[in-house]
Picture 1: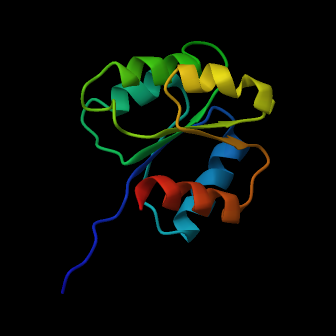
Picture 2: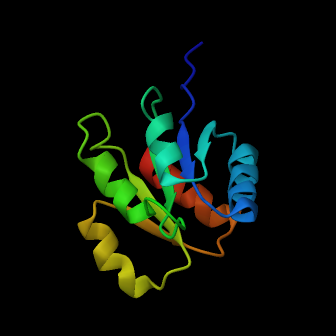
Length: 125
C-alpha cells in the first residue's frame, strides 16, 4: 500500500483563541502541527523539526514579529523553500511587504476552513 506521508504545519500565533481555532481547523483537516506562541518559541522548536508549510501571524506582540521570523527562517538553507503564509488581520495593502520578505501567500482573519484547506492544498499538494 502506497501511503502519502502527512504534511506538517508550523503555526505561530500569539493570540490563544486564534491559535486554538487554527489548530482545531487543522485537526479537522488531518494535518499534524507544530505550534508556537512566539517567534522565539518557533525558532527554538524549528531547531529539530521539519515542516511542509508555515502559517505565521504577523503581529506577534513583544519580541520577534511574524515578519521578522519569516525573514530569519528564509535565510536558513533547510527552510528557504518551505512556503510561508501570513495569517493576519492586516489589510491586503501590506501584501507587497510580505512578498518581499519571502511569504508565498496571505490569509486574512477571519478565515474559514475552506480558505485554509485551499491554501494548504495549493502549497502542499
